[in-house]
Image (cartoon, rainbow, N blue to C red; front, side, top):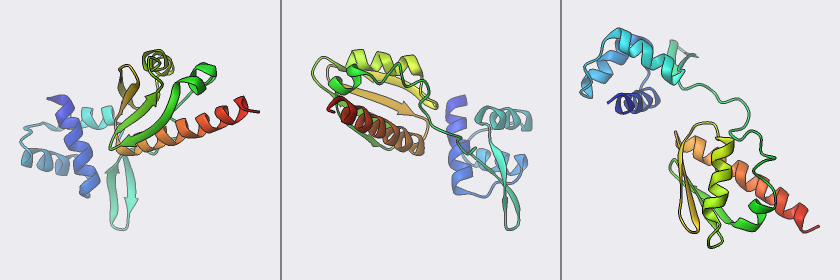
Length: 159
């Protein structure tokens, strides 16, 4: 129930101007969530929402991300990366990494080791890895970072 409520809050603040916790409660009640101000306050803290200025005051927003989603990539991006990965793409909030046959689980373990920021979880099969991100923007950013690192590593390994 909490995750559904948090998802609803993200949807509410991205589609509406919500400037107070009281307004948030009204929007949540319209969606069937019977919440108190204390619950909304905790949810705002959990989501790390910030108030941003508008032309008529302030509204709640998701925090701006500082830096990259991937940290400590030295452990991840070595010969295994270049020899495993075939293609990296994303759809909505899921990054899909196509690998050579039998390589997905090994490379997925490396991804799990570095814990990308805003990663909900990973799933690996024989030749495919799915990385579930919190938002579509997170998936887009992670896909871009992985592709950039892949191009750099692949370019360096062929030199």
